[in-house]
Each structure stands twice: as structure tokens, then as C-alpha cells.
Image (cartoon, rainbow, N blue to C red; front, side, top):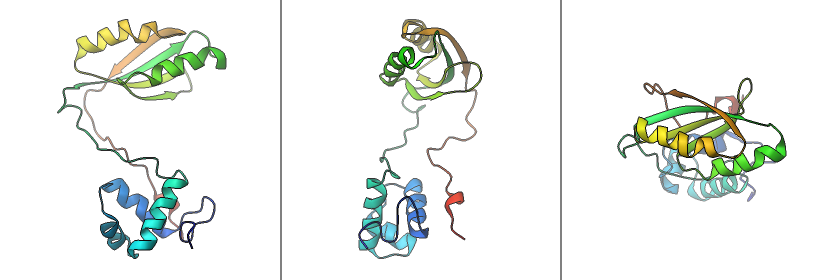
Length: 167
């Protein structure tokens, strides 16, 4: 079966789930190593990986970089309040945020504020300049509230998969 070897629509079987789990742990696995770990031969494993990519379950591969080793010692959580929260007024702000490499994630949030950003900077002075020169000058920004990470307890790009396990 060429459509993901057992997958139909958005249904994942135990091999798909195992592939996702293994690739989250180590995306550099060769197809042979991956197939050995999940207990499936190489050809169906390769077809399943391709299917997972084509269906959008796997959206990319990247190296995890230790931000501190490259001089990014400050991780800030920034709540951005928009002046107006309409689709037309928020779109230019969204577009501008997407262009900022210092912003590593951005989410619409409930409660107070419009967006929650994670921002990396080399130090507090650099973060302060970024806030004053960039964030406060973005379109439709009314206010900025910041909290700083004092220490990382857990940081992972992996997503939980236990809810996908079939009985």
C-alpha cells in the first residue's frame, strides 16, 4: 500500500507513531536505523516517512542549538497588547512579528494581551534596545509587558504522542 502503508486519512497506526517518536528523539537517523528501531523493513519505513511528510505530520527537520553557547543568554516572555484587535489591524502586526528573528515563537493568547512572544537576546541591554527600537514601533502595538526566564526546567521541541497509542 503506497498511501502510507496502512494509513487512511489522518489515521496513524503504531508504526507511524513509532516513526514520529524516533524522529523526535533523533531526526538524523538513517532509514535503516529507523526501520530497525520500529521493527519494519526499510522500504515500508521510507514510504511511511514520506507519507507523514506529505500529509503534514512532519513539517521539517532542524538542529537544536544551545542558545547560551552562541551568546543568547536572555530568554524573555513578552506579552504584546494591540491597540485594536480586528483582523485588518492585527494582520500587519502579525506580518511584522514573523520577520523578527529574535522572536522564536508567537501565540495569540486569551486573557490580557493579544500576543505572547518568546524573544532571545544576548543580554539585557540588547533586549532593552530591541524592545524600544523594534517592538514598541511595530504597527498597532499599544503596550509591552515582559517576564524573563530565570532558569530552564524543561525545553523540548517534541510533542507528546501518548494520546495516539492505539488500544
